[in-house]
Image (tube, rainbow, N blue to C red):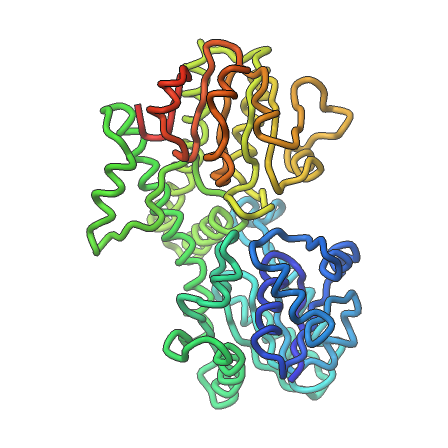
Length: 454
């Protein structure tokens, strides 16, 4: 069997690497238009930082795992094609700001139809709105090349930072297909790939539409939990309760559970906000405005939490940070990834710069170039107001305050006594991830603040 995956990003690259490692009898090829990205996948400096990824890639690359820009020939030879391209929120036309932009999915379907090469199974790996498979199927069916296609939905449920362990030991693998003999046969072929290493009882099969909707729903429910505990964190600060204690108390209820009850500056990443916006758009499209408003509130609370963090920082620093220097520790949306898409750090840094604050920024994996691009700045725009550092300790020297925006483990190991010695007084620390022991920081002399804590 030959598999071709269109898209060498955060989903396509790791997923195909794991399939190649676990299925040595299958040839897996990842194709992408981006020459630099493909070059990086073929090097020791992968374009994605993910614990364990380099080892998995090394074990299969140039054996049965290949990365190339040669798209058409690999599409033509493939038995199964995975579509794993970006589906960003539309920023133009109808549905702007909410609907998913499916132009890359459509382009993939048209390219598959154009190259032909035989009967194929086309697998949606990208996160897509429900009924997207219908569009893909219509394009493929209208190709007029004499070949037959089956469209299968196989959404990813990876958490960045733990993607490789998620792939190796998933909670579930979801595969949806048409309710027909040929559809069931296509689903079985995809099931057989994962069954090389995943127990069959963890491979769930559904119809196409249930599979597509399940991905959006899963992300919406996870984001909802984060916004729920963050809403309670505001009440905790007002009533002198401790949000971690509240979360621990309610998390022991088996009906609730303890996961995704960690209060913070809010969720980020490429999925949660995009998928909830898409979900609300679908609800309005199908005449369900009350349902749309319910899910919109999850995003509203997330934005509120970020602004509340900035406001608390301003209040504690005498309502002005103009000319003051603040160390920003972390820019990625979560630890163990170099992905900063939709990171809470983006809007927080922008707000602090608006308030004329001077920022010292350090993140162990997000590059200076990525930060500038995401913030919409040029190298020439950056002066004293934004500096970049190679270590957290260095970034904190001579500052008035520290803001922890990503929960990197190394921030727990810093010598905060030494850091305090090198800061202006009063020295502030704002822990946006509730990573540190505020009591110990206060004993050192910091004015220390957490989320949902006094």
